[in-house]
Image (cartoon, rainbow over all chains, first blue to last red; front, side, top):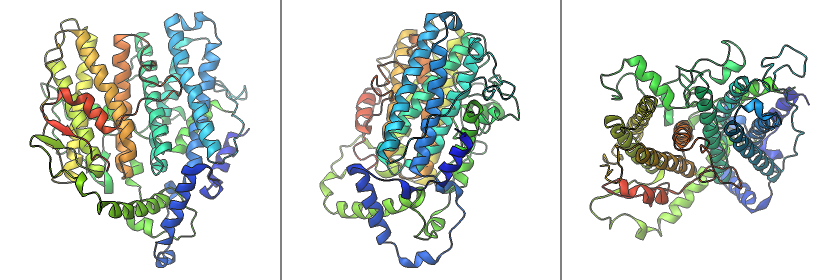
Length: 292
Length: 241
């Protein structure tokens, strides 16, 4: 299946095709109908603002989550078919097994949620984790399943991307407590995975923290699609409701070290202390490196 | 990040014609309008649930979004105080690497605490809870095992707290900010768990074995678990209400 076509189809989907089933969804639909009825008709005369970010539907969110989980699940499943020598130790293999079990459960979860929402399931994408698009181009990670360090680099890329992708989607399902809690509870498991993969890499000599840090040795090439997985993580400006900025630079005294750190060092820690969201488009772009 | 700066304001939302398919924000607006009406109705028969008879010395976290922010602020105060102490009096049997790592985690938690304080003061002036007094007498800061066990408790609790509180936030920007913080807490939790037992970063004691989902806890349950580490009595009963 052409992943880009899938994306195009996703973009066309709107909530009207979200056939609601079950009491919870019926209640939501009623709520929506009741809500529209009380809005003054005069509002209909006003022009529609450009709001591209607002056009994501519940099914878009669930489909993105499913593709990312299918990607991770396929990645770890393929790794687990390799001999123990690939992992080096039983401990390493056990950790990958733990992660793969969760990814399978997440695939099951989002499959179920999509079916409940009335969606028709697409066939799972075809994956090529060397990044060669099934041999049609030069491989990005030719030894991904023969060199454990390469494998862990790709794992880190996928997990960090997953963490950021969920963060970018939660606001689109905020109105539904059940969906929201399913997503956030998946999200923090992905963060645990990312942390462990990073710890494994550090134990094997890589310069990397268990959280995203500007001091990490880059695992992507500047300007590449993969690098988009980390673009923006250096952000230290945190916004609140109504575009309110909490200014770490100017007037927020942060006493994190003695002697006091330089402003640059403090801001680097601020960037570490917040993981940043990733737009759906960027997340799919990174994922599509491994889909053909 | 940019997604928040790009969010349309309320004026923009109201400018949408009704024939537009009900999409995310507009749906949220309708749901919010109805929820608001419901809240008005409920407030008429809810008088006995107020904090009028609150005992002195009790800190109420408050209700609505600011209640959730105060709740997060209380937990971040606790974590920041804990790690500040870990940093000030590191366990004798910590390795140099561990010492360095805990000093980094201490910085993250101090940043979360100060961020939430600034956030509440900015968005809800006068609503912030007081500075809390930690009670760490049960922790032996000289022993690595005691410090790690407490760190694991706090980090796992923090993750479960954010996971359970997301649904109580009404403002999308707060939800995104909570998401930015919780994944860093989850990274800490996994790191500390791996220090205690390598490979326990997401074991069955914290990630549900049947569903692969992290724990989510209600505010009152989280505060019950944290109360013994805080001198002031915390009332979380109206968080998100």
